[in-house]
Image (cartoon, rainbow, N blue to C red):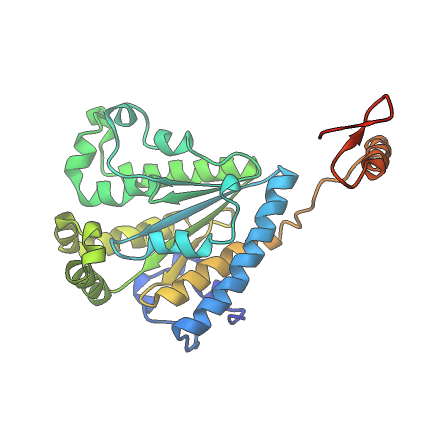
Amino acid sequence: MPSPNIVERCRIDHPDRFRLADFDTTDTAGMDLDKGEAKELLKEDAKRLGELQERLFAEDKWALLIVLQGMDTAGKDGIIEHVMAGVNPQGCVVHSFKQPSAEEIDHDFLWRTAVRLPERGRIGIFNRSYYEEVLVVRVHPDLLARQKLPASLLGKNIWKQRFKSIRGFERHLARNGTIILKFFLHISLEEQRRRLLARLDEPAKRWKFSAGDIAERKLWNKYMDAYEEAIRATSTEEAPWHVVPADSKPFARLAVARAIVERLSKLDLKYPTVGAADLKEMKKIRSTLLAEAPSGRVKSRSGGRTAS
């Protein structure tokens, strides 16, 4: 199994000391993972996650919100596909947040994500999230102008105010039974270059390519500054950030899977118990079923048999 310190290496427990430059995008916690080895390790974690998700669904008390953030090509879609492979689709929903609609812009910046939060017993995955409002909107001031906020609210403190709103929002969710895990998939500029070239060179990947990715790439340093400040301001005990080195896709998937499994395991999820009266009734039903003919046909009231 993966080294037990993987989650601790990634989790931001001391945001006041956080510096993105301290995190090596190539770090694999000392593990040498070829694709076959990583696949087997991830399979074990995915199986365990599937078991925990079933208990989460059955107990129906907690919800889990997974927030995935990262630059283009960071591997968000791959995380969803591979880490959640063992989860029952009925208990998991994925929302990808792109450019907001006119209706969404007419609400507060948290509204469009708030209405898509997971209900109790389910896992919700946000592929990008409300954090776009302090990342892409911050890097592109014209997007903030489109939000039609009163001029008096557009002062220099707007980002600190949004961080405060996010912390309050996440604290509210935590107090009402939603577990929040946030992941920044941290890749290098060079690794993104390689992945973009792969999209251009491989016919099966060309549909993923967008010229907009190149434009955003030129703003890399601004994005890194925005991520650093956002993570520093919003990594809390109830909603911690995990900075996941993601140049290695196998390692990134393992790290995310392990963090989810570790957190759900701490909930001590249990299947609901059956009361004495219900158990008595179940025993009666069981006896009735056992008395039926094994051929799949049941006795008629006249003593003959009828088709099932």
